Length: 221
Image (cartoon, rainbow, N blue to C red; front, side, top):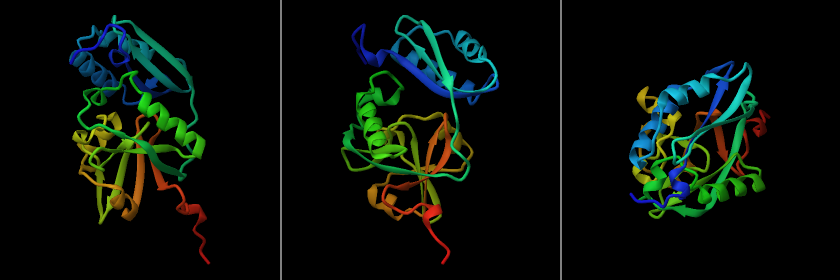
C-alpha cells in the first residue's frame, strides 16, 4: 500500500471512553493502533500511547488518540455522557456505498470523508448512525459503529471482508462467542428480531430502523 506523505490515510486515531482514569478497553485500542501502524509503516511507541491514555483526570471522557505520520501522538478529550439505560436509538441507511476491496477501510484513519458524510446525514435525520452497504449490497457497518442483528436466534455482525473496520468492541463480542460473523443485506435487517449498535465509546446499544416504533412507543393496550 502506497500513500503520499500528507495522505489522510496515514494518520491513525482511536476513539474510546475513559472512566475515572481507566481507559475502557485501552489495551485493545493500543493494540489495534500498533497493528495499523505496522501495516502502514508508521513509527509508534505503544508505551507512550498507554501512558497518554492513563494520564487523564477523574470523570467520564470521550478521548481521541491520534497517531500522526511522523510518530507524534496527540490526545484530545472532552466530557462524555453515556446513553441512559434501555434507550432504543434510531438508525437509517447511508446514501453512499463502501468498497469492500478498499484497503484503507481496514484501518481507522483520517481518510473518513465517506463516513463523515454519513455522520452528517444521521445528525440531520435525527438518527444515531447511518448504515452502509458495499458494492454487493451487503451490510458493512455504521459510520461510527458496528451493527449486530439477531435473526432466527442467531446474532450476526458483518465480516471484515465486507469492508468493515475490525472494531474493538466487535472483537470482544466475537471472542466471547456472543456474536458471529455473517454476511447479510437490508432484508435480513428488516426481519431481525433485534438490532444493536456497538462501539467501544458508547458500548452496545439497542437500535431500530428509523420509522419503526421504539420499544417505549409500543403500548400495552
